[in-house]
Image (cartoon, rainbow, N blue to C red; front, side, top):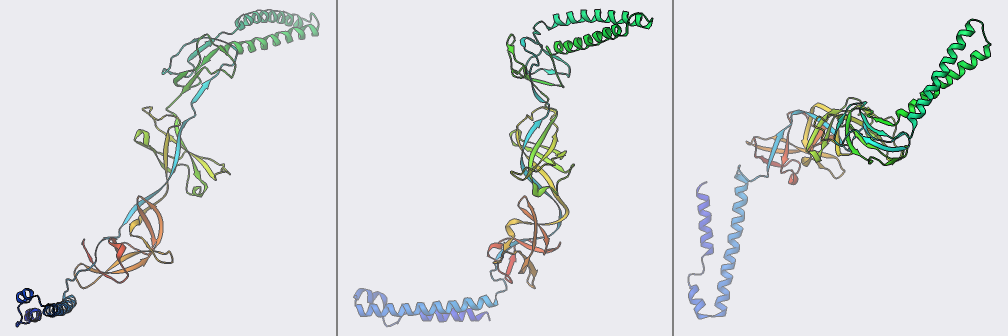
Amino acid sequence: MKKAPYFLLLLISIACQPDPSKNVDNVLVNGNLEELQALKKNYAQALTDTKGILNRIEARIADLDTQKKLPLITSTVMEKESFDHYVKIQADMKTRKNVVLFPEIPGSLLKFYVHEGQSVKKGTLLAVINDGGLQEQLAQLELQLELAKTTYERSQRLWEQNIGTEIQYLETKTRYQSQQKMVAQMQEQVAKSKIYAPFDGTIDELLANEGANLSPGATPLLRLINLQAMYAEAQLPETYIKNIRVGTPTRIELPMLDKQVDTQIQTIGNFINPGNRTFRVEAPLANPDGLIKPNLMGKMNINDYSNPEALMVPQRVIRESTSGEPYVFVLQPTDEENVFTTQKQFVVLGKSSDEKTEILAGLQAGDRIVIEGVSSLEDGQKVRNLNR
């Protein structure tokens, strides 16, 4: 068998030799057109014959060579792994302890007792407003109350001794009770001249100037905010309503801070917005360093599905048939080392995440699938696996 190639090469060499009676150089020097054309024809025919022989040799080599060139692929063996799917949606950072305080009575601002950036406790005196003489009116009413009280108590003693009329007793009692209510109302009005912190927080901004005239409910005094009571709010499409529960794990991404916060759903709204078919969800945010601010944009990643024993494949290896059915190529072993036969395997797809897709049916643990070189493969094709 080893002598066959040499014998073929000898035949090729003889076929390529020109007519010995004619020397190429002599023909070229003489410049005879007919001789040149005949010489060209001989060499062209010899070249054609040689190519035909080479093609036959290569075809025979391909039949006999067990190491012939096959499509190269890489593969992986399917293994069960934990899979968590997340719904990703835009979210706003908010706090319910973010208020602008307004005066409840008219008057001029006498003084602020705090400054911007100052931390205050609930009940701290923040500002005082000129009460416009309410203190004097209160003092006068308190004097009238003392007189009404004395008159009532005296009338009561006489009535208990059966002295005087019942009408006199009831009139003094009514005047005394009425005066008590007037004093209480005036005390409330006077109390409104002093602004106290409704909760623990930080003075974010002083919005009025000392000496400025203030209108009730119209002229803002200051903004008080507490950054420790933050939460993330998002509007979730109604299609996810059956998969979201109070306590569902959630991760908040804050790109501006290069930060992530792990939390869980705390509140689920019961109202579906008819305009965009969404419902509200909230998740509390730990904010020990105070970097998370109200209205900061972020993303809410809600874990709506988990499978501790999922079969996951890269999305790039999934192909579709002409009818739109997804499939992957499974490798079947052959007698040759590291050579496999491809098998088109139709699959049922689940959820996708991080460029991987869950396979619900069609594959099982231990199956070997093609992951690289899949684009040019066909069903039943022999391939060489680059990885073992």
